[in-house]
Every structure is written in C-alpha cells, then in structure tokens.
Image 1: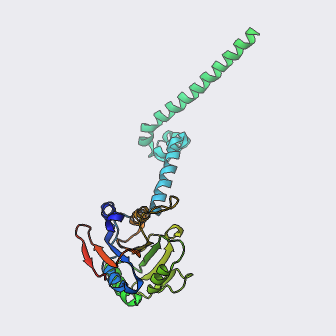
Image 2 (image 1 turned 180 degrees about the vertical axis):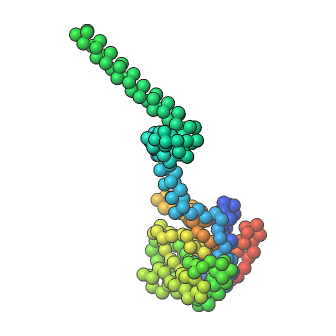
Image 3 (image 1 turned 90 degrees about the horizontal axis):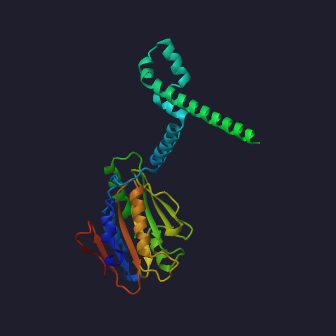
Length: 140
Length: 153
C-alpha cells in the first residue's frame, strides 16, 4: 500500500509533513476508524512550516521587481533612481551649489555625456538622411 | 465516532503550543472521487458532515477558528494556507484504469507538494483507501524510517 503510493519518496521531498498514516478499509462494518483518527490526531502540532512560500509577499516582490526593471530600463528611470532627482533639477541644484553637489559631481557628467551622445547620434542620423535625400534629388 | 471529542483536544493543544493569535486551522479532506459513494458518505458522517451538500463544519475550538473542509480533489478551489491536517481518500487501486484520469499517486504527491508550499502549519497526512479487495489495516509512518503497524482488524 505505502509502496504503491511511494510515501517514502514523497516524504523525501518535504519536511512539512509531520507523519503519514495509511488506513485501508475493506469492510465498513469492521473498520475501526476512531482508533486510526485518534492516532492521526496525535501528529497534529500546528508548528510553523518553514517550506511555506508566502504567495502574497511573493506577488508583491515580483511586482516591485518588475516595476523596478521597467524604471531602470527607461532613461528617465535611470535618472530618477540615480539620485531621485530629475536631470533639470540636478543641473539647477548644481548651479545653486547646494547639498546635492557631491552626488551630482559624480553622476552628472555621465548623464550629460549620455544625453550628448544621444543628441549627436540623432543629429548624425538626420544628416545622413539629408545627404541621402540630396543624392536622390541629384540623380533625378 | 464523536469527532468533536476526538479532534478538539488535539487541535486546541496544538494551537495553544503554536503561540498563534486567533489561529485559523483546517482539517482538509480531499476525495479522489468526484461523486459521493456509500463509503465516502459513511466517512463524512463519521466526521459530522451529515448530508451531501454540507462540505464545511466549524469545530468548537476554544483556541482558534477550526474547521473541517471536504471537497473532491479536482473541485477544490480553496486556500491551503491554514491546512493543519490532510486526509486523502480514494477507492480501489491507486493506479487509474482510465487514461483520461490522473492516477492517485500523482494526485497525492501534488496535493502534498502544494500544501507543503502554501500551508503555514506542518501537517500530518492520513490516506484512507476503501478497497474491498483488502482487509482492514492501519499503518503509521512517523518519519518514514520506521514503520509501526497499529490498530486495524
């Protein structure tokens, strides 16, 4: 019976089960259910199950992780997470010379460099586009 | 069998030791059969579930909110969070003769796995097999290393 259900294999997969009990009833008239249930109830202990995964917390964690990834993947999000200060404010704060200076000194150049590269890249694309259009017109 | 006098002292003692505040505790009884049979009706009656429509019974615990919940396995859609004891009931052999039905062993393993992951309590498992080909017997596996044969007739 136990071999048929592989209770041993099952017990190896978890520590949450305090005991397994198998009751085979061939004849209802002869079944001594009470003895078995009493024996079974002795294994109740209401101890905390360390295998438990809190699915509510897990959902919250995944939601936070997803929103964190979304934020960090967007350029605006990178700015916000870098110091919780948007780029224009940082520049302004830097100009004002207030307490954010140390932080902006470290991160602002990278932000500007990235922004500059982005603008230059766009500019190059525009110029390539213009050149291509000019070539097309000349060929006509 | 008076389920209250058998169940309540053990449940209250366990919940008191557990140190939980107003704990919820459930004895979950899952039947492989979707439809009631004379055997499952007999068993339900022993646990105080007198008619086929009643699938939940509040137990008069003095410590927390304790209850018995009965459901066919494939129709169970409730929470496993408060399961403190699990009773798994099937009839006949563990191997399914129908290819469209999952075999009993797979069902039991999945239920135990899910309950292990979702219940806040450690829990014992009682497997009840109604099998006219077998003689009555009861086996306990406290740690699956030693097998004590108890009860039976």
